[in-house]
Image 1 (cartoon, helix red, strand yellow):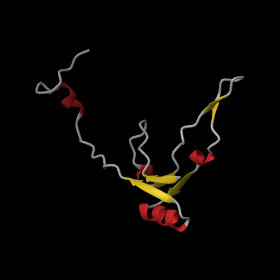
Image 2 (tube, one colour):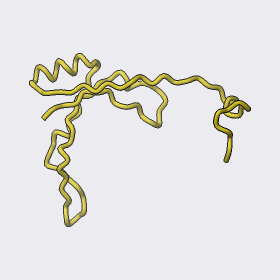
Image 3 (cartoon, rainbow, N blue to C red):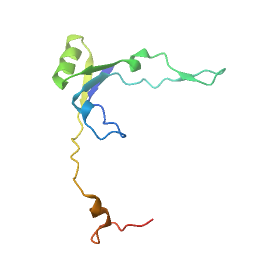
Length: 101
């Protein structure tokens, strides 16, 4: 079993970047999901998919995984650079996509 070290994606409902510096060490799901025939709920015997450890930096997460003999994979994601626009640009005549309803 291996762990994934990554930065969590920003929340879609928030525009701030509060959690973007944190790194998470988590274990992927093994995909074995059981269905309870009485209630119809799903479950799994793999409790490692519930483990999520937060770290302040990528190096801290890597050193934790190495010190506990955990095989890991680091996933990098590109930085999002927002483009500043004004409200009036939504109604510009030279707009690439016309304003329609």
